[in-house]
Length: 106
Image 1 (cartoon, rainbow, N blue to C red):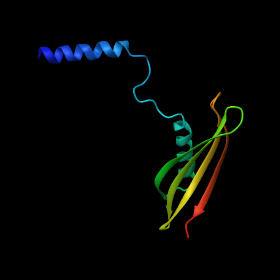
Image 2 (image 1 turned 90 degrees about the horizontal axis):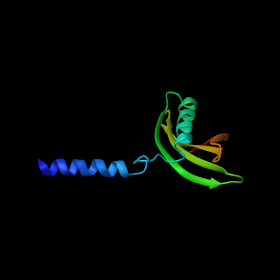
Image 3 (image 1 turned 60 degrees about the vertical axis):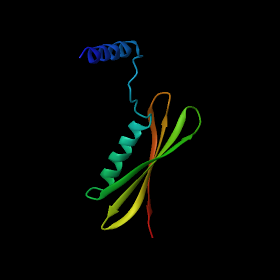
Image 4 (image 1 turned 120 degrees about the vertical axis):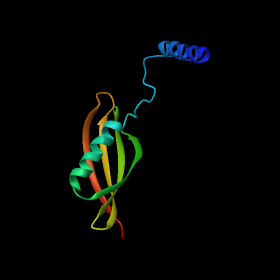
């Protein structure tokens, strides 16, 4: 019991000395991923969105970046990909533009 109490006290002391950062920080594209999910769900109501993947970021000019998200959508038994491309500013965290494109599978 004494070892357990010592362990807990030690853990609490370490946590007090740790910087005020979250242990599991969310990725900086998370906000725009949520926007992309909402847009795909609104564009394809009633269809299954079965997969989601963050494809990466391209740097543009003046603190502007472009994030790509790909979704697998099943509509009437047919699968196809939907890509959501979001351009935003890293400095002020503002959305600049969004483009949704379908890639039908043959």
